[in-house]
Image (cartoon, rainbow, N blue to C red; front, side, top):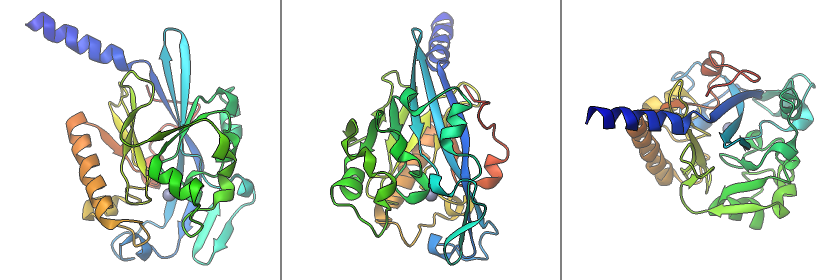
Length: 273
Ligand SMILES: [Zn+2]
């Protein structure tokens, strides 16, 4: 029995040792008023949101396959200092995702799969580069973003080059590399087909990349739903699902927009595995 437990433990560790996670700084989004997020301006002091992009590498039998998860602020603002697209919002983006990939000796052609937590402008800013990658997208997000583009919540020009890219429409959770190491988790509500990403790392252990399930730590602590989400009930169901997943996987949640968290995390070219 003892031997069996050791063998099982070795198998579990070995199965996940082939994944690397890179975090890129894809900009900063500053707000003067957080009330649209369902929080009062007294309930959180946070006004600066980090914008995360992630690269996941899966190594198996000498083959490397890569997933890009989220594509940051619009690439057009890189190097322009503070840009204010609307009153109360300031954007800043220093080094493009393309250049950050190049620093790893990668080009968009090296990215096998691309997935976005959702199609809001601060998550698809370099999406149009990845026309050769297979787009992994929930069916409802594809419908709302591509088939009948909703220009109230999306800026389709940022991603519409992917309309004819290879794609896989998802209707549930999805095992990206087929080995259980990385899973897209369907978590709709913020947008019609929002999803989060589970990455089974060895150290620090499994992590869940939140997308915009939560924007602030206070949103999670107080279960607050942004007023601009497409469906509040679905959002709460998604929160319950992801919280249950975090417990069952003993996983850590990384809130993508959490500047204070990002300040403590390794950025590319450093990585987690
Ligand atoms: Zn966002």
